[in-house]
Length: 399
Image 1 (cartoon, helix red, strand yellow):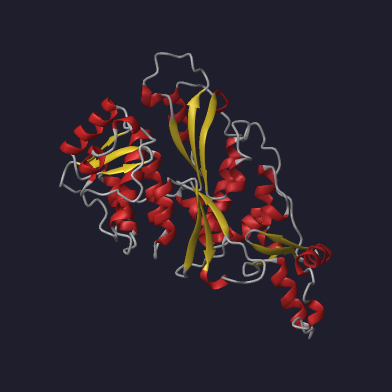
Image 2: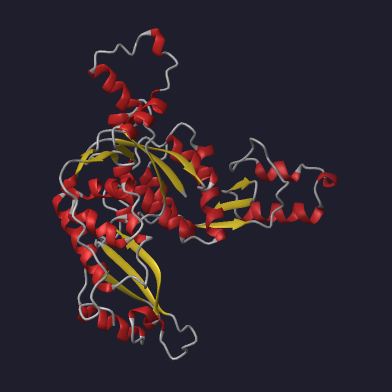
């Protein structure tokens, strides 16, 4: 499931495109999307382009007046856990709501609580798909309508089955995939519209899910087959994790999942990366986070096309060597601003078809300026000191 984020402050600005976010997402991924969309804390934003969501839900999301990132992320996590039948029920229940109350827009509270109450519905998908009732959808004359259909247009057994269901449960709806009815008046208000029923997510700079590479080891219990470990870490915590997994070395593990404050770093870290390096790097990143410089660091990594942890550590330790502008949202806007500062009238008809983006791409490169998803960045005159090196074997935390 995917959404598109745009900041209210930059709506309609030349070249501004916002950011794409795949859901469900962890808190670091959500924060990164906010940064790429240039959404400042406390400022307004919009969510559009709902891709790969259940059909009827997409309709309601497009119409929804207010959607928070936290709400739609929570809803996506609920959908991810649904079975195929539950998704059919959810989609059909939303279709009932759309048809029965066309004038009222569903709120995120209603959508989430609908997902909480799927056990109050029953879905008959064995009712033939080709049976369409057009605009005759809700309870009323459905029973009479089905009874009057000539047998030659519908098999007798098929017709009896539908009539039987309608007699027992006449408060449902036919959809393209079957018949849905609500059999219980009970309703669980799992979400009050203010506080989402989730535990606060504890943020670590790096969180790795480790498993033993020896998958044939049958004497491991389920909780021993995978261990989460946070970084920065210490030797005792690492020892405990390895002992739990029943391995002697960090290299005997496989990384199953990574949750990282800096998405670019996740691809650089493997079991071949020295633990001391991981600790130093994540400790440096934590300092940047504490100082509010994490967005600038992400831009610097992209600018330097960084692909290894050694350079990533050096960049973190030399961030003062960069000038960063997080308000530069596009090359087009950068060049228009620059032209105006130089007294050039860009409203002149001569600029009607001028390629500001293409010109900006060339000009920015000539100036040593880099345009990244997080803003523009360049090296300044301060010396960049390479401090990282392969760790000494005696100092290494490799176990």
